[in-house]
Figure 1 (tube, one colour):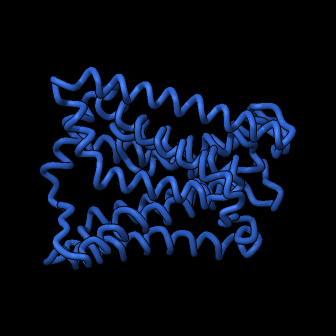
Figure 2 (cartoon, helix red, strand yellow):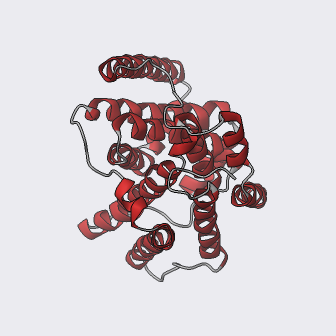
Length: 307
């Protein structure tokens, strides 16, 4: 099996995601975090997420050693990345709107049920509720997922090449959510966030983008749903949505072209960090046992979630 520059195989990242998936399934099966009152429920969600991402990352980092920690770049780097971060954030939000409310029509019913009839309602009656909700549904999941995926997983796959690292990170991120209906929403979002990590050289900016998107998903998505479903303003809504998305895509490519010129590179996903034969490495990455188990767990979990 091909090994990266540290001598470790591509076994690790998919094994880490498998561990996270198994723990998250255990939380659901044993109904951990079902507290008697709302504040306690928020606190339980925070604690479970900290354990889910923190414990998994700690176990993996202890096995891999300090050399991996030194490679994880969390620094903000250039302030110029604010612009591209905001553009990526808007694109993630608008693409999720199109995927959820137009392309994958079954998701519409699932979304309505999950938002309006969910057992766990986002209710804000006090400042403390705001703090708990922000931590439970915005800050902690964004930080945990970005550290795990745009930090550890993306870094571990770097020696497989830029394109392979972005694709594998996004596949594992999507499969972890165990949902056919949400797969492409998470996959495209992860592609944008992982590429943002690549172009900025840090998972700080994907974390900021993920944070802003979580704010939208928790507090703003219901309004987008209402606007997209209103017969009187539906045409105007979709005209604006698609126009803004195309504008953001144009701005993104313009920024990337300028950035690549500064870096002295052509505008492409190069294999600059890859070692070894590309075809052999792709095959090795896709056929590692933990990844195949990840695929199986995703398929079984996603099918169960349909019923």
